[in-house]
Amino acid sequence: MPAGSPDIHDLEPQAFLEEVHSFEFWFQAVEGYLSGTTWGHRPDVSEQPLPDDERERLITVFCNYCVGETAALEGASGLIAIAPNHLAKVFLSTQVADEGRHLEVFYRRMRDLRVVDPELEVERRASRSLQLFRRRLLELVAGRDWEAAIFAQNVILESLEFAVFHDHARTADPVTGDVLRRVIKDERRHIGFGENELGRRLANAPHIRARIGQIKKELDRLVLDALEETARHLALARSDQDRLGRAYLESVERLGFGP
Amino acid sequence: MADFLSAYSIQTWLESCPQGYLEGTLYGHAPGEEEIPLLRENSVLHEDAIRTTVQLVVGERCALAASSGLINAAPDEASRRFLATQTLDEARHVEIFTQRLYDLGIQKADLESTIKHHANPNLVKFAEILLEKVDRKQFVAGVVGQNIVLEGMAFTVFEMMHALNAETNPKFAHTLSGTIADERRHVGFGENRIGSLIKEHPEERPAIERMQRDMSYFMLATFADAFRDTRAFDELTRIGQERSHSRYQGADLGVLEPEEMESLLADTVLKEFKLRLGRIGIEYQTPPRP
Image (cartoon, rainbow over all chains, first blue to last red; front, top):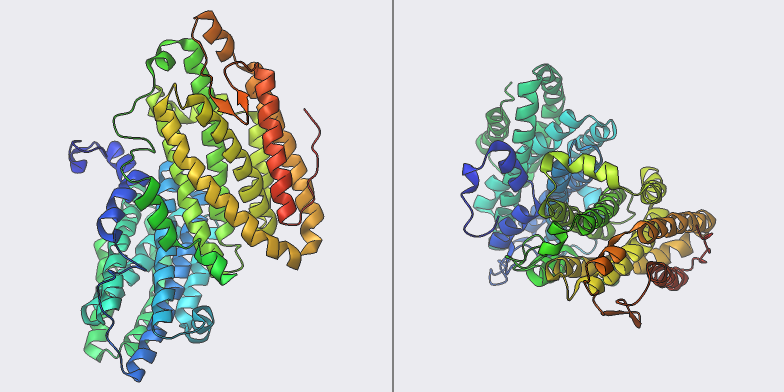
């Protein structure tokens, strides 16, 4: 939106969508928080040496983050082909670049943590529940089920990542925290798209809600298993683990998809 | 391979593209730049600008579908991440050329019907050949079709259009210059990454060579339609508007007849194909001339 234009929230609904789904909007948004960063963080944020056991646990956590981001990259790129209009295609393209960036900065972080071959390490350590989630998401995309795939990708997966990254960033070492806080800003945009896209469709075709509810039930189990595993590697207390699970469920519920 | 692919990382892309040559642009050009009045006032030139821009949108939509579709077929993570940046580049191209249609007066509600009305059927067939390979997750063929043939064509067409517009329509020329910079990166990736994969999969060569010949045929047919059907050159002569004497491939574009321009463009693209395909170990197949 050119400088001096009216506030974006004053736009009519269609004009608002055209604005927020555009490359131009993405471009302005990421400039604000990626400008001057290297591999997803400010170069002046200093590395804090970690004890070996903590470093090992963090590597496993990043392996799981990479599975989530790979699923998101594959899901978003596959969704472009079935997106119902060119605005959605353009938005998903910005999401593809975001997910690719997340994957890149997470791999880089693993190299910083002295992992020689991050791809191999991801294969070795990744959570089985997350891998099953990834497979299911790609089945929904391959089945060209737009509503279900957008729900799985931009509501469930993004809400899971948002809850976990948000929690992890609070206690993480400085570099990891800086990386995660910038990734979270992207996730907010993706959740916004999912919420908006599904919200409008549900308003026009309420029968979709039952189908989405079934998919949520199926995916919740995998998500909560993955959360439990990640929380264990982050050495969270049981109460924190439960809080994380609730944070995920609440963030999905806020989008109108309750238990 | 890892070292070469690091040049195609998202970090490099962020520094060179959004934080580089696109910084300060709006829909690919400087804020405040507008289409020249002549294009809006003269109905023949207006129609010609719309028709030309529609072909750019059709080509870029194909490139967007292909690059996003190839991500899930890529054999390594670094290639996927490069294709993620290419997906966004192509989406940006779709957006800026679509915006040009709006700038030329097309109403948003009429966008799809305008594209359908003006899309060249030969360009649509060209796209279908590529997207069939992508749908089948044939990565090597898909990247050759996308990053050598389609991008090679786009690069050359954009360069010629840039030369034609540099003096007369700075807004459109600036829009094109960003896309040319993107296409250069895409072609480079195709050449570098695919060469090694072709060596690993020599059995794919014949099908790739057939694809290149078929895509080249429909590309030439598209050029033929574009130059033979245009009324823009006659209209410029009729209204006494001198054409820009910019130079392209050593020729003065201000004096060439449409057929000569078509030949110059076709020969330049085919020469580039031959050179680039040779670099990756594919034997160039001469297409029949439409």
